Length: 313
Image (cartoon, rainbow, N blue to C red; front, side, top):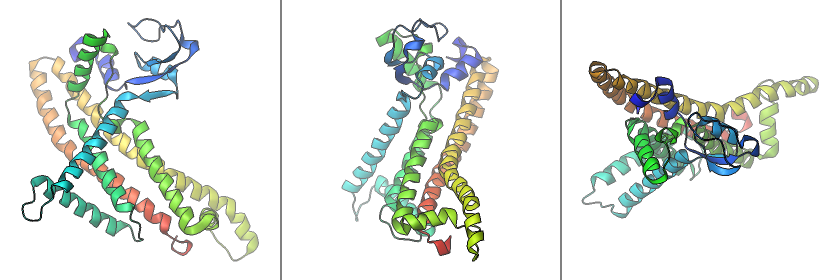
């Protein structure tokens, strides 16, 4: 694929999601994609390029992100269910040993970071760690394999130009996926904050700290200052959680794509690119594991913060 496109087109193609969305009537008759026909009609349809996807706006779904994230979630459930059904005390399988090791690791992490008692936290941490790790692990699949296969299928069965078939395979390089997970964790944090502290306690946490005074006038004057500081700190939690994972995985995917460009520059550069690809893949194993661990740990810490009362704040 790299040899059939310019470097810029190749990079853009690999960083564009397979998008299905509601094309607005204002785009009808316009040729938004180079080499593709003009938009024929408004309504729900697949985008032929990033420009058409942008025209769809908010009313669009990244099909590849949804497909891989759901598929990997199902794989996680199937593997752990299989290990649980075949669990044996006398002759444990390799899968059982691995699952038990992961569960023990998660349990240790939760006990070390979560001081309250909530039966939801450990299963949540396990789901986050394995699911995010599996999504990150897709970054180790050679960047051309699955997009090229998708292009062949699109051309053979649907008559679509392969250059207009997009198929990103790493869900965590899509901010929609990382923000979706972080907002879910943020919603749980808010829910338990209000449940444990009450509406008044939660409001007090946002308005009575970090500056406080026994003087009622000063206390009132501090309320807007405290609210601005605490609100920014509160909103920064889901933003940093999502952007940290997205930024690291996006950068890693970009490096793989740039290395792949070397394969189209002759056999010598191709061999050099192969060594670079191998070295970066080995190093990337640490990155994808570390990012899954950080995402899980921060989720546990945020849940623990929801249980902290005002005196501990």
